[in-house]
Image (cartoon, rainbow, N blue to C red):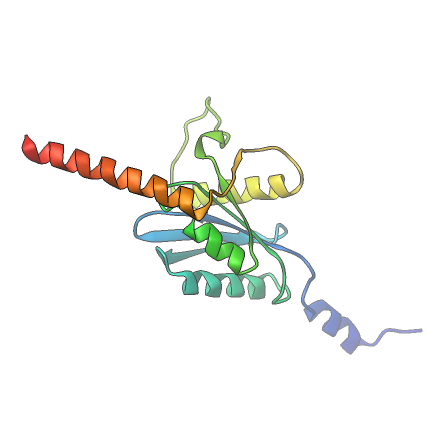
Length: 171
C-alpha cells in the first residue's frame, strides 16, 4: 500500500491541534504581546494600549503563523498592575484561559545583571507560562475580585491620588 504524494502534502499543511500561549506586557501607551505554540520561536506584536480588537487580530495572526486551528485554545498571562481586571474579564469572555500574576512572585536571577526591556520581559513571561502550564510552580496567581470589590479599591485609589495632587499644589 502506498501513500500518494498529494495526501502527504495535505497532511503537512493541515492545521495542528495544539494550544497558543501569550504573554502581555502592559504599559500606558503600548502593549507588547509575545505568542508561541511552545514549539516555534515567539512572535512579537505591539498594539495600542486598550485596543482589544488589535489583540484579537494578533492572536489570529499567531495561530496562522503556528499553523494552528482557528479554534485552538489560547492561554495568556500578564502581571497585575494599575489597569485592574477589565482586561482579564475581556480575555475570559473571548474564551482565553488567562491568569494574572503577582509581580513580586516572578523569579529573578539575583546574581546576574538583568537587562530590562519589554521584549525580554515578554519572552520571560511566555517561558514561565509554558512551565506553569506543564505543572511547575513558578509564580503566584492572583484571583479575580468581584466587580464591587474592584470598584471600591478604585475609588480608594482615586481619593488617595487626588489627595497627593492637592498636597503638591499647596506647596
